[in-house]
Length: 151
Image 1: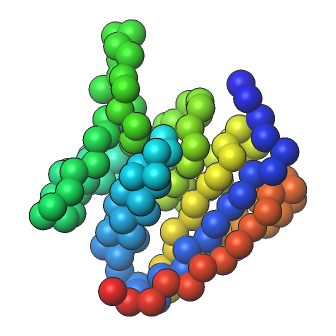
Image 2: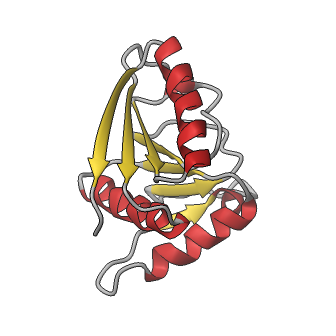
């Protein structure tokens, strides 16, 4: 397993309180990273969230499609070439960007060169984000914040 000494963590703070805003921003960020040639893993809290995001990636924009697969769809030894992988129990592995939608930080933080955290203005989500922020700082990550206005 490859590790990096300079993991960059970007916190995107949305001014909206809806969960929908997080899902939409995740799709936009994923599309941008993919179009720049990056491989992306998206970590969710549950199979239900993974399924919801899977469906959204087919429909979030009329003029785009995000080539993705769910972690469970890679079973039976099948090799996937999808640049975007969704899952709630991600084992990690090589990727350029991990988008962490889960309530906890990933186990092996240093294996990712970049991690994106998307928070909205909900107090519970912000508090969980503060806890992940502390863990990233304790792990020696470089952390940046980005305030994102309403669309």
